[in-house]
Length: 139
Image 1 (tube, rainbow, N blue to C red):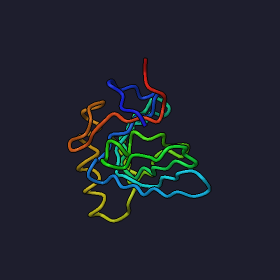
Image 2 (image 1 turned 90 degrees about the vertical axis):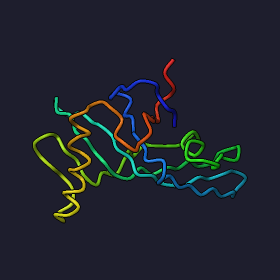
Image 3 (image 1 turned 90 degrees about the horizontal axis):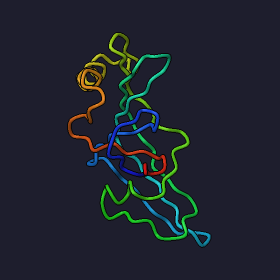
Image 4 (image 1 turned 180 degrees about the vertical axis):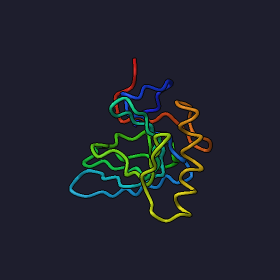
């Protein structure tokens, strides 16, 4: 992943809760493998509607030639990670409709986070670090 200095929704950026970043590396078949997760927030746009999302982001890389750095959350995120599947949303808000948990307490927690996130678009949500993207660095 790479940290972008500016927000571009087309680059599918993620704001990461650095306290939740985990990773495990293994060595087999002459290469390194990395697997981990983190909690993230992101914006997406579909048919002209902007959505604020929160959920889990899978962090993984296979067949790395060099040992991946897992010394800090930022180091983990800076590895050559794959993201072909994007984030796994737990909740999503478009300013009118909520999608996510059916548990009232979880809905309330999600909306407490998502409503101000959408209202402050495209600001990085509180207690998150961003914007991280799987796209090549901007030049």
